[in-house]
Image 1 (spheres, helix red, strand yellow):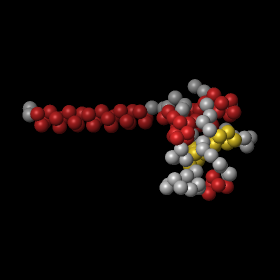
Image 2 (cartoon, rainbow, N blue to C red; image 1 turned 60 degrees about the horizontal axis):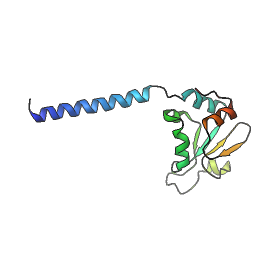
Image 3 (spheres, helix red, strand yellow; image 1 turned 135 degrees about the vertical axis):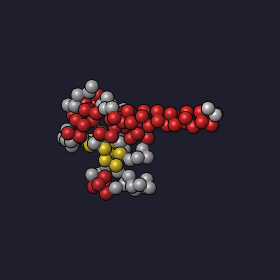
Length: 123
């Protein structure tokens, strides 16, 4: 075999491994899937903005389970204004968690505190 053939074969195998690894990662449940779903079931809401570093920190606590969070985006796509839904709710900063009893907590909230506030069990 020529070097070119080996190079192309190696590249194909590398791409296949990346695709398979990505699929496998997405197909397996996250550690906090049930917890994140429970937060929504308990009517907790997580208001944030895509550009907010503290919101990213909050999401990172959930790992790949972040996709199941009861997240509400408050920023316009250009990052310059707040969406009407968040204006109507009086959201002043990010992240803001709102709970079924009407209480709000601003800033990054620990998983333990979210569990205590909602009754959702941590894994």
